[in-house]
Length: 253
Image (cartoon, rainbow, N blue to C red; front, side, top):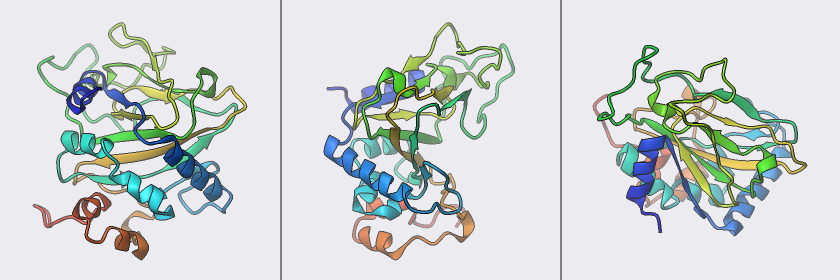
């Protein structure tokens, strides 16, 4: 059995790690069915075709996922005991579609001049992570997630003139996931979701955790009000309340 520390070491070394069987197939099926039902409803602002946000509002199966072990244990070990969930999206990818442009998420946190590298003694700081739960088996023709190992240390965007981009001689790793697996990666790692060439929709549930000072991304952001049933569900559970964003006083308020 791979230990939590082994996953942490692998993540810090290559920019991602995979937990096999992070949730049961039955739980994955429940999440998948809930997503498909949600996709039949008109999408709200901030959502789109095949894409839904704030999945923790959709019932117990989703709220429980926020504190699913060992994934949340990994997040707390990496980000600190005050970390929280800041985003919970889900989406499907149909045939011919994909997020197939190599990219980093949001922006570069530690840009480096071209031709320079971090001292190997420096561990790349991590402020937030993306956790992708696979709700179906992902065959090679379904557009699996691909990542470039160690590229989270590059301080660079993927070179536009390379497809696939190569970093320090390392080529893409393809995540051939099974239903219930969870990929955790740094958004600074060069990655993409390749094009789905099959007749089966790819379906994933995302969970993002960040340090306390990473703002939660719940549309419409500053005016968002968490539903009372979500708050009630977390009553008497300090860990879940903190993961939902109910923090103690801190340095800035």
